[in-house]
Image (cartoon, rainbow, N blue to C red):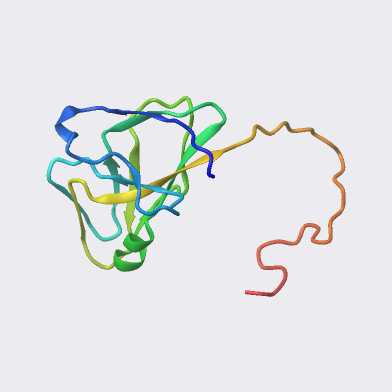
Length: 152
């Protein structure tokens, strides 16, 4: 059994009530598809950024966040990605969810009203307490990073 967490969701403008709320596409999906709330369509030109509205705001319980992630089909078929990915929607944010789309592809891409443009994933998080110190414990990796193993 998977734990369920209730999230309050609000439509901002009734003119977009025909657009479905975010939902899971399959029983095993971890992300809910979220849709574009545009009047007709938005043309995302090659190498262009667009901030696409969803007409939704949420009330996330404290200790949780929603992450905004790309949809794999849009990425592989059309070169559409999300900047600042994964994006974070904090529990104290009450504004409209907007998706930062980027067209990495070689042509223009049309985003129609109600198109699935991203997915949102609920995550629990923990607050870090930082303890400043003059020394850190050693590890087998040490300070090696950015391809230090020589393995690709």
